Length: 190
Image (cartoon, rainbow, N blue to C red; front, top):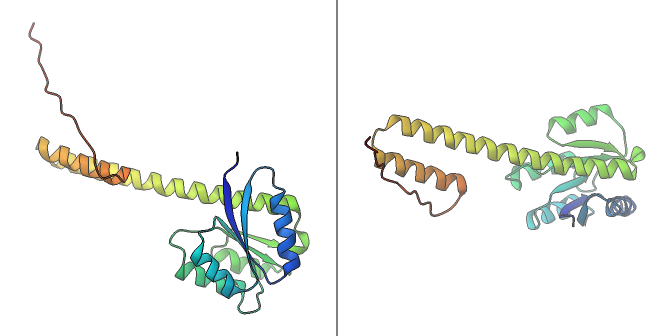
């Protein structure tokens, strides 16, 4: 069974939202819970209430531009990056450059949008977001391991080494208890 991803469509055109919904619900590789907003204010409110895996954002909204909303979402809401795919009715290269420089993951022109293109763009956004999260976790683990190794090298006191190891492993695993068993060494005499 496929995991269900939450996708938010922010577009003032009900017809466009219906098309995107239909395209995405036919995706054989991914299941979606789809939320919709027809203006920036409503989209912002939904972002604050429901964590989204991907946002499809129209460039032209009635109450503010998609770029302004994107900037506002990044400043106010997202602690971690949520992939945003910008949609526009105009295929303007200058707009595409602005959108990508600000951090949108993709830029799609509505007139060239097909079911396969939208499904692939959304799946790629989910995959890239997942890989980014894994990379951040791996970097954090590497940092903790390096810090622990440095602290252990700086100390010759076994008790202090064990306490440091326990504290660092707790932080790495994000748990409240870690047990370290110390075995006494028995030397064999020949």
